Length: 544
Ligand SMILES: O=P(O)(O)OC[C@H]1O[C@H](O)[C@H](O)[C@@H](O)[C@@H]1O
Image 1 (spheres, rainbow, N blue to C red):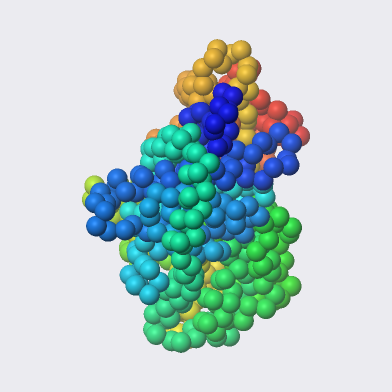
Image 2 (tube, protein in one colour; image 1 turned 135 degrees about the horizontal axis):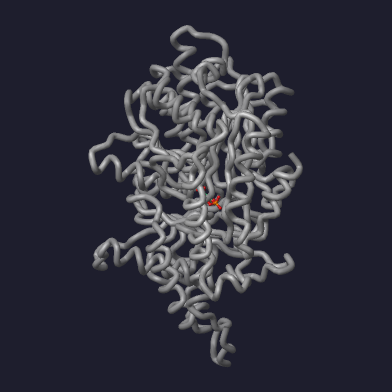
């Protein structure tokens, strides 16, 4: 970083400092100081510049000619840095001459929805939208997700915005920053958009149940929002539909996340909602991540509908509506899921890559080339339906589940969540499954100054050749990511992480012993790669 010229209003930053904030199709950084080794990089001026960069990108995209004033909605999750970043973002947008519509506490899917809602009274549709969130990451982080009515922005757009932001930032003057404050005060409007969004969810369930006002009457459903932004689901969705929600927990927003990480992939979080269901003798439990684009559920016996089971459940629901359709998932899904989707449900399983944007884009692509697909879903709990604008929406996934129990009730079936559990009949689940994350040491001499991605690719290539020489192992005939191999009654997948210098290794097998045999194959194949930290794998095979 260069020294700041004395006239600068902000410390000087290079373009690369901005580009480091990119995390796939999101922006992520440190917004709260005080954690050792994690210096602040998502400051207020940086955020203001990023918002101005988005505004400039949007003006160009929409070819706005000045006759129409564009507007951008801004929402946030429960993080402690939310308010200051909301102000900074608003200044960036207003400074660029666009209107700002603040929603306050909101969910990521609701923000996208505001670009497609037709409702003048709520200043909708907006032209663009920004969600301030860092999903399930620790309290000191924050970030941004951007939307237009075409969906979430992709990687190339984010890079473009960050490049613009770097230029804008380095031209900030003290007067400019002061004047953007004035402009923001004048052009910010506040709207209770979550009311519109939640009433749409309520309408969807009522309609699916045959226009019954309270289709969930008699159901006891507990919600765990993990102190993120999803608490609205109990009072604004479930209760108007007639459900009892007592025993729901951690609904109050608290950016220190004092109870558990709001993340349906987290074991402690799943344990917490399961316990709440059992303690309250509830029919169903629902859990969200911080910004409500991911979710999972729990049936009345404590069976978790997350990961492969959530995909199986959603596939069963979607395939009833669209027989034969293709279900696009991420790469770490079980073999049993493929059998279930294809043999039991009569659909097609397209096992693609990890990353919610990847699976959604792939489903859109399949439709464009004539293969019908209605569901794109990841084991992480991200899921999107064609009928819902391919919007990655954890709350909508739960609405589909509620529709199922409400319509079962309407047609005279009793038994609460049993109708859901019944849909999973025939799903084979592995007796043993594990994910081990093998780190690449980026400063190791073996990288020879190259990127960790190049090194990771070399590891994968070597593993692939190694497998070819072992007749007990078979490479997956169709595979889009990493090296997936069957053997010893199970399978493993080694792939590059989407963002980190890590090779995640997933193993599923009929027993712990078989999993160790598979682990040993990988260990033997990788032993010469000294920049790869295989201690997690060593520990796994030695302990077993
Ligand atoms: O590749 P990994 O490190 O396992 O991370 C993969 C995950 O990254 C992010 O969290 C994305 O939001 C997820 O959609 C994706 O599944």
